[in-house]
Amino acid sequence: MTSKENTYSTGTPGSYKNLQEDITSLKTPSIETWDFEYPGTQTDLEINIPEFTCICPKTGLPDFAEIIIEYRPKKQCIELKSLKEYITFFRDVGIFHEHVVNLILKDVAQACDPEYMIVTGVFNTRGGIQTTVQAKI
Image 1 (tube, rainbow, N blue to C red):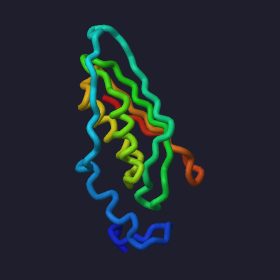
Image 2 (cartoon, rainbow, N blue to C red):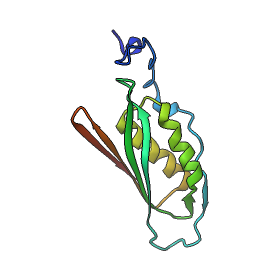
Image 3 (cartoon, helix red, strand yellow):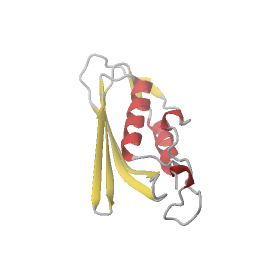
Image 4 (tube, rainbow, N blue to C red):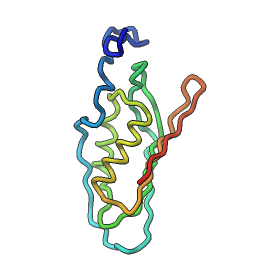
């Protein structure tokens, strides 16, 4: 059986077919920014998203995590309402933990061009295994 023909543990044939096809081509909502009026200062921001969800591409079951975004703005800060819409997009997306953390880093950093950024995903324990993924620029 190939990955494109999987029947996942949900018992529904093909219900999660092709969820992991091409993560980089996902059409995610845009992330807006606003002007940071204190450039040159060492202002560090931390955004905690304790209720992140996505779908396990292997089982079709939901994965739950806390996503933490740490960054130092140059000229732009992340607008939180648009970030919430962006994060909510993943609720129905089948994506591996490592992919989603790196995709969030890429998209959010591209939106605000920070001096540095770290995105950490602390995924809930499943099957006795807890996963933490951290990506940084």
